[in-house]
Image (tube, rainbow, N blue to C red; front, side):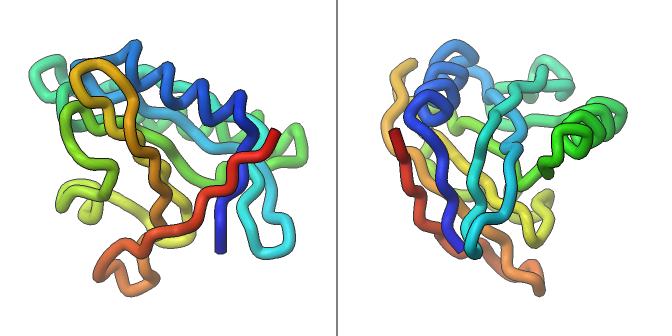
Length: 142
């Protein structure tokens, strides 16, 4: 399973991470399954609902917002395929907290923001047994 997104969406995720720095940004990856790959056709940012003092290294989405985004995606014939978030001044790999909070099946894109500038961007999928994340290939298309 890989993840495919266009250069505009990849740039948007990076820009959201930079704009949110030193706090984490968060958003949805919306699209469809295409020959085993998750093809992202839309990214949708979401306001981080976490308490202010935790926003630098945690994100939270309000359940009603999740349901609204999922309904809108399905109305367009699409699905929520995963999520993106930033790691301010930290590597673009899942933290222990990410592993505890994640759900299998979804893909998670993480962008590292070092001193306000985006660096690495990686994608991950949680194993069905929730033991750990496996890295997933990202293909950025024009």
